[in-house]
Image (cartoon, one colour):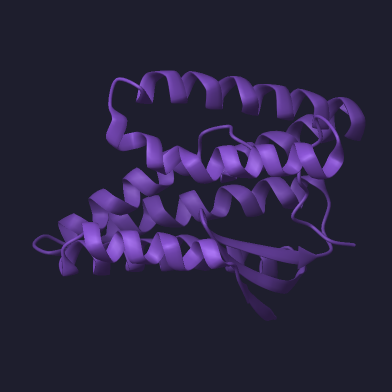
Length: 189
């Protein structure tokens, strides 16, 4: 598996280092690692091959070879599921911070926005039910609608707006690359 780092990753890392206390940063790193390990374990369990780990403005993404829509859906949901399981297994004390961050990360990732696990799972489910063309169209439409609603709600809490920036960058980039409404498919091959 190759590792690809985008410049935006370093911007995100620098912001987190400046904004978070060391304990919070450690808990976030552990929660992110558990989340990504959930995806990796599901990729391997589905008989797929991890191809690339991408570190970007919005976090991590694992590209893989093989599988189908059902595998895509299960792999997408495995990260948040691992986060919830990790939070439930965390003991008292300092692990409470890890548990809280892990639950928040899992809940956020379940939003049906294309760049997040919930959006990837919804895309796979809709493609399985409606076929690739209609599934992609509906998934992108839901993604843009939810992202718009979350952004409108975040206007009341401006500190949340930087969290949404990578999601909008992903949506706009995809639209520019494809010339319209079309979802990214992490799966290759």
